[in-house]
Length: 221
Image 1: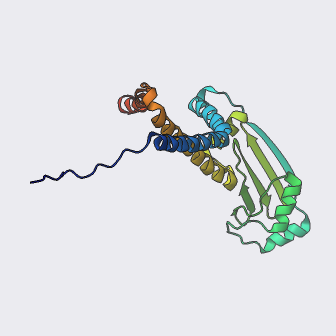
Image 2: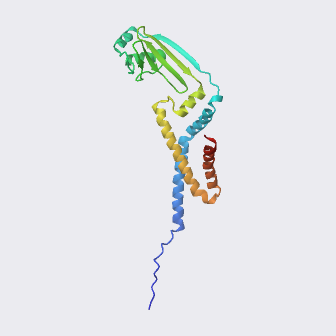
Image 3: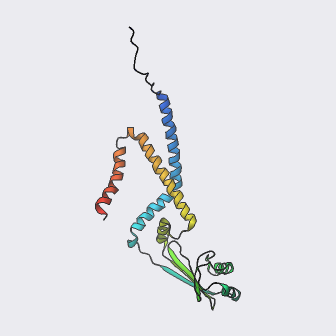
């Protein structure tokens, strides 16, 4: 009686050339994404790293606020237009008044909310690294603009936090953060591909995770 083999046929191993070609493809893709994301986020990462230090030492970095004040009088025709402006509102000032403020004080108040009362119109003009405001007396038309700046370091710190920087900077931070994520993930993938020939790779990566975890558990209360 003839015996037949019961073992199923084994899947033949992939040729070494095919594995090398696949590895080369992924290495090429990862290197491309890694250097592109690095190029996009390089300046931003340097800025955010430096301002991370300046924010951490904000109390030790001296800053002398500089305040500038300017006054002007709203023309009579524009003051007359404010007679129809509500006595209690947060609406923006009429467009002609906004254009006058831009010419008189070099400030943009068009579309900005106000704190309007029967006596005056107040517009907050916050900026990175400083503050400002504009008031218009509704009876006399006297306008006062005040601006306070706290120096370059305060300006960069506020950019780091996205404070009073506007929508364009808001979206820039999101795009920059995405580029940093791509840079980090592709870097991790490259570490994985090269780890076989570099035994210290994963211990160093683990150390980078362990240090902040230990600090958080032992020293942050």
